Image: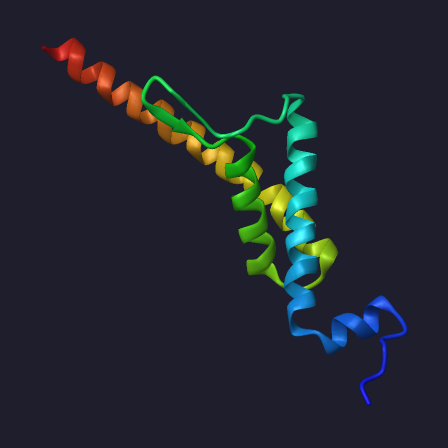
Amino acid sequence: MVGIPQSVAEFVAESPGAQYLIMSLAGLLGALVNVALEGKPILLPRIEDHQLHLGFGGNLIICITVALLVDHNFQMAFFAALCGTVTLRSLKAKLERAFREEIDKLYTEE
């Protein structure tokens, strides 16, 4: 007869999918903290000027993916989700700036 787990730790040890759920929750928490640190409202995906902006959905996808990739424990997954999105946001800003500068150079040379 299968017994009922006595604690959350026993449940996680017995259920292979529970670990993914816990890491996903760490990613969700990381996404919410990112939004809180930015001081901006949670925005749903939208299309503006023929461009898709994922808003909170994109942040959530990145945070959960990073948390699942780390896959050690809740705290490590949370910090990876938090730091990973900050790093990716910084990289994205640098790439956009570099592209804008190159496009401006192309238009000013003509």
